[in-house]
Image (cartoon, rainbow, N blue to C red; front, side, top):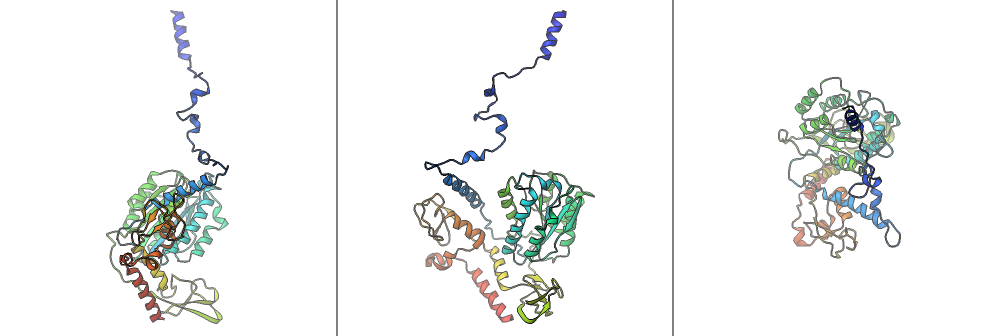
Length: 428
């Protein structure tokens, strides 16, 4: 009995060790288990017969462009809010010092947000934006609501903003943004766009009350997270009709953030037609410098408000004296194109067709592979992306399209631009 007991104890202490060697640790693809967790991106680059890797690099770049092209633009004819008031919230906690984005999260986010601000005002010229930073459980407004992108970019690139500390406070940032948006006019859309890298938030109160206040005020919250999905963050975005995305790299963060640039649809509860009073100021240049009402700085040139005759530095903006919205005719024309976006091109086999934009022959996989449904002209992938993301209008439709295809083009956009230009000349 004693021998059997000792044998059973020895069996309990026995540990089965895999002695099959390193081959037993390899997976189905021939690699070790710890290597399967990472994407070996360097294996995708292969040398050609001449020893060059240029073809592989061009292939990877072509795949990224095709991924951007596959993100088809929304062509539904709905009412969109072209006058937007956006609060841009940036996380400046210690979590933004992680180096998973080169060189760090905060540097990558600040560089991308500077491009976002420039592109935002390029596509939304009559909108306004403000920058908010949160760290150490507090929230601070860096810039006021304005249409001057230089002020916002300067605030984002300030060295003091890179002093990371503590944890962010999502509730304080939302409350501060909501308090600033309450003063915005009711005819514009109110939005909050957050770039967050922390998985925690240090809030002084109940976040559910803040969520109810956001829904009651009709404020749309969108968020781009740089680490992982957090339930409360995603729930806030979902219940306020916003978007939530998790960025795995810099390209993914750019795609997720730039999806917030086009104006969203107006909610059914707010889809009302309101008359907005605007002024078209005249550019003035004097022999002696005078102070502007926006920055209180002396300058020789500026724009004179048609109501109170005050001088402002740039357009578009709101007059600080009388509160009149000051815009120029091109600003309205550029905002109006969101109501009539350029249709999505149809992918076709290249077949040696010459691109109607750049004139490149269809030799590669991306040359002359997309056809415009209006003018039936072929475009390469680069011209397709350029037309939809930068130009926002097919120039071939206006100039070189045949008469049968030109009759299909809606001319409402051109009539509106002509009307605004004539109105600008009459007022001045």
